[in-house]
Image 1: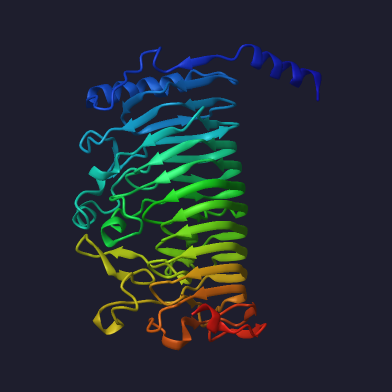
Image 2: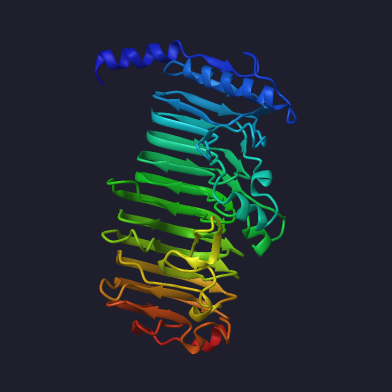
Length: 448
């Protein structure tokens, strides 16, 4: 190491400060009013902005009511040690907005060597219940006009650890242009009830994504997610490629270990492994947005060593995103999808439900050692585009235990269309009808 660089590092360590948020004027109290929340917000921003490389902002082990809309930029080599709770205001009228859209609660831009940590488990509490409103009615009224909890934009050498993301009003953790990022030992919880599955009431807390990551060289491990949307989602961002992402040792229950939805973006070299999905809604979920997916690519993807236990919806979905769109009336219609309706196929097309195949490219995708236990719906949907079909899709040991005898696709078990090279290997059962059967011939009767 160059002598000057070493000297700079040693000098930084010698002069490092710990700034205690409580001691510099932070006002604690879960039920503090909006005026206090605004004061805490301004102090938090100014305290972080004052840090030098090597410094730490310590949030002590108590609760601070705080207003959202915080934006921090150009932080370098600083640590936020959240030993207590930042409880974000649920004063919807006072929350800062950009037009009609509420600003993200906490946003970091262009940061390097930033660490968010805790000596125990720190909490970012989004107090989402008031934003969600009355089940279904709240979504019809407010739609997506709810603030995300934490966003990382253009962050390199990032560590996020030992944090609880609680009841985000919308997304829990979103990111763009990450480069060398580690997310570990964290939990996400977004619940309307304490039920052990995802009822329609629970799922009405729409868009409460878990970890949405975009960038390269990202490692998500040893995390727990229970929410009402994508649990861990690999996203695209503008012209940049999202690549080299490893997600492992995860407990996840929500709307799937997801890739997408993306439009004209490129995602490659993604691995999910060693995951337990207890009473999840969806399981494995890869998706394009229809109208914007031309030119999009999802390739070189592996899902392996995954148990999907009694999913409420589709254990495997590869195709167009199942999502609603905003009608001309200004409301969101779950049976009018882009590109696929949330009501499909239960409600047929002639009654208003739609599902189209995406135009993006799926290539070189392997599902290995996947166990699906008692799915409530048929095992899955595999739906490629007729002019740009799925290429290189391998099921190696994808086993379904006790599938429904009267599922949506009957004895075919899967809806399978738009696949040019699908192969079933090992002890895969049932074999999707559009796949080449190279299985080892194990008797499926032992599983039903």
